[in-house]
Image 1 (cartoon, helix red, strand yellow):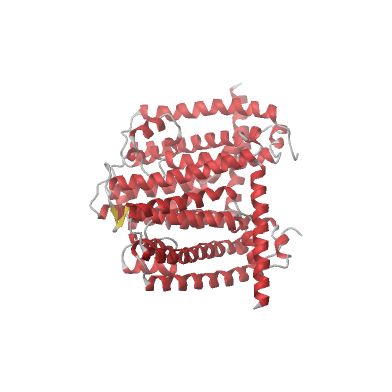
Image 2: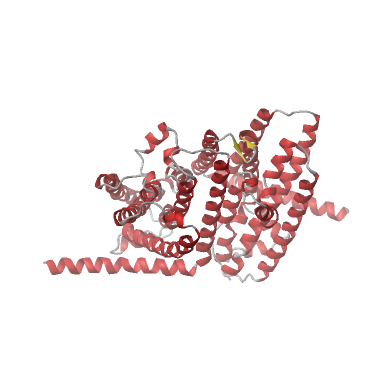
Length: 275
Length: 270
């Protein structure tokens, strides 16, 4: 019995590992897209750093942030943006539904969600390796980046929160992509939500600098776990305790249940155009 | 001369025709169009909100007051909107190079760069143009130096934003032409990030070296900062001359790179 379960698990993993591997090979083929995305993130950090430098030069103090804190914030925000948010999950899912490719998944013994999940994980993994390489010069030129109180527990919390960010991001935009079943084309909807996400995840400005009412509303949304939460853990804004991860797990669970339900409902609507 | 006039008329007619088609195509899926417009609106809202948050912490950014910065932001939005409504195709050229669908445009008896540039225009981005214009007018009413001289400033401003448009366009063309070698879709992010970076006064990049880089190598300054400076603080001959020079050189270089890239194009479809 146990043996059988073990075999099943190995089969499950090896099946999806292929998606993971293929996704990496695909990303390597289209290197320039990857490189362009990286360049735009670097420009973006550069601009934000100079902007805040100019504001601090006037003798201002922004919230509880020193200039160094903000620089670290924007570097991490750009890196997260590159590793995770640069991947357009909803676009991919939407096109598969719109163009009828999802029929392949209905006919074969693979789950559409899990294959998409491992494809995205493959891309994020490759992005992470590139970030790892970039961080090395940061270590030499900007050692302050690591000046916070970083210990093993904080690092573990940071890694866990990044995995959480990826899963929540992936689940959330998978759901947005599923809207294609009803809308026919959910690109506008996707763009709309991405714009909101970009701000409310904290990519543009640390969330604790936002007006109180907006942060209160934001506390009921999953966006802040896509960028702000991991950054706050790295920079020590949040004390590491087991409780802080409960909302992450809760969101993963809630979105997972939603996906199961909405995917089922969507397939009932699906007409398989182009297939 | 007569030939030139006829050619110009032909190109203007083609431009208007394409925009008519683009816009009716865009509006055909009403709900999609509504969502796209809402998305643009949300993006603009958060963008302006960000500026407001910044100015809740500071009164000035390198000598630029709140309303002067808004003037730069408005100018950038205006140019960004114009770019997307008139030349959106430049941003997605990579997809067509990859799929080989560019052939369709290459076989027409019109200048290829022109046709490629105007092939697509996104109607929803008119919201950017309108908001940009609104923000410019709003900040002008708060800057309050309206006089005779001001009308002349508007004249210079219009010329300078035309240069700003040429610079944005040239950068977008150069970045797109790279796709002839890399054969890759997507990646308009760089052009997009550059335009977004132009909405802050380029004086924030302090230091002589930085000033040179952001004026002549990476000419963010001439996209929105310089036009806003001339409009709010008056005519500056040196800046105006430099703006024309940079726009002209960038356009010529981009055209050269485009033509060179095009010669490397190998269709993928046929």
